[in-house]
Image 1 (spheres, rainbow, N blue to C red):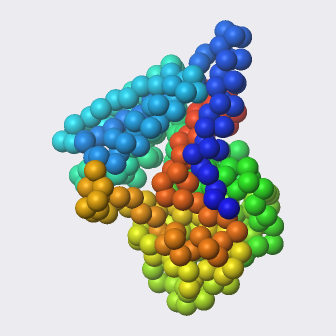
Image 2: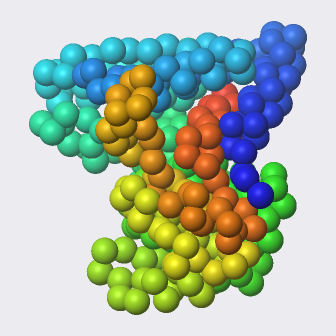
Length: 291
């Protein structure tokens, strides 16, 4: 079965929009999500545009702050501090990647944990590890929601997460090992130094591919009936496409789909769920549910 992230994301946005109408009718503050976009990266423009559109659908206020690629690190940090102190904004994100002269880690640590709706701040990461209320990283949170909405069985299942990034792989492994649903998996966190990866994947009930290598996971690495979640999205040249490129995931979809019980497409799988998660975190921030 195809895990339709676009469909589920729209359902969540509709549910949030209904909540926002209740907030509005009660005279309370409408949720407000802001984004900082540095430079003119095409993919980042697309992502931020989708987030702004989702805010409109959900009835949120949204603000987009565009900064030149040549902005200094201090100037960006000062803008973040300004948003931290703005009572009108419930949560905000700084779209990654950033230009090489700016430290992403310094930027993440400058964002107030109370407004860190991307869930990247060390305080939120620490709270997640301790299973305390927190803003969960948007992509892993989205995957958890997708699995929940499709009633995918996770308890006692073996799971491999390929890729140990702080944004997806590492938090994903923590969430799936939690004593909750979805969770209670026996998790292997695989990476570039992992030996016998083919065998590990072949023996896993659930595979989360998040390494950023187009079509890395093939049918020979997947057992019959496995659940495959494809987090990767890479632009590759395509002569027959109007845009001149196409989007590929980390999974060889046409091969692997024949063996899976569930699989996410690219695009239309994990990506839309990331946006839905961002809105869910912003609604929590508006309600002061975490802090």
